Length: 253
Length: 68
Image (cartoon, rainbow over all chains, first blue to last red; front, side, top):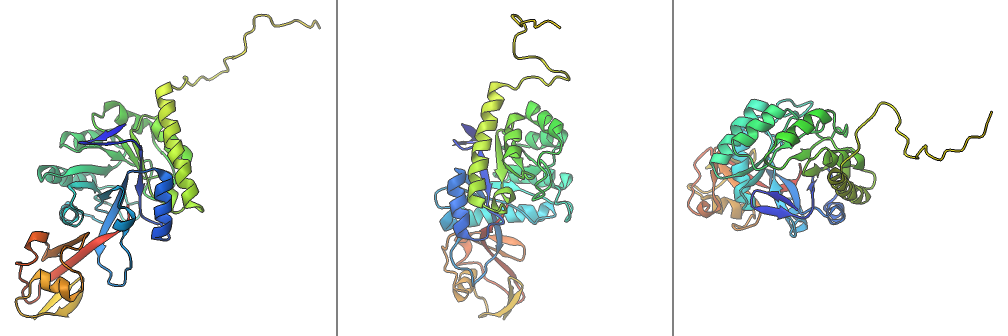
């Protein structure tokens, strides 16, 4: 079971809802993924829009994000608006520092996280894979840390498994790999490295077959968690025979 | 008076409330998944009926979309 703040989840896969071609495909992928919590964003109402994403997410927990915010002030205001709109004090906090890489802005992130925790929010920050920043975020009261594997939507997987391992080793709150997953094996690796969960959007929504990829990543997360528990063997430079040498016949010259 | 709603100028009755504006936009109060900010300040749902707009108010009416 995954426990974040006062909630428990049996699925260790969180679904980001961005990038799906339609709400129908999103709904199908959601069912295939088994996810129990999905991110949503807040934008200006579109009077032309038919059907609400919230109807598709009726059976899961909607986790509002602050995507698109470049300052702590905007992120705080967006989180407060999301609290009104979704009647939840949970927020996936994003404070972006660069519009090309969408990498987090560390000082802004920490400032917003602290303010939102003080305001009663359950804060899940999207952060870099810097173990020191992850610790600072935990210190100010974040309910989880969500380091990136690589930039949002890049599909480059986990660029720095060493850093991710350090974050996992020191964390007293759940570690959720957020961003960078390109395919199922990346999600499995995140879990093998000890992450508590994986958040996936583009890898599923932009796959050729989003519903099939949702299923693949669901099982990859489960496989990775099982493998972590089972314990991988150490890496060696040279082979170590698995077949015994005792009883090996000699065939002469 | 004129107010700016999601970046577009709209004419509303003098002293119109947030609730009145949402009605005019056909966004019934109580509608799930809507949040309002006036001049960069959150107006809680419970205050939509009381919060009056003034000439030039900047209103943001937001709702859930796919993302993240």
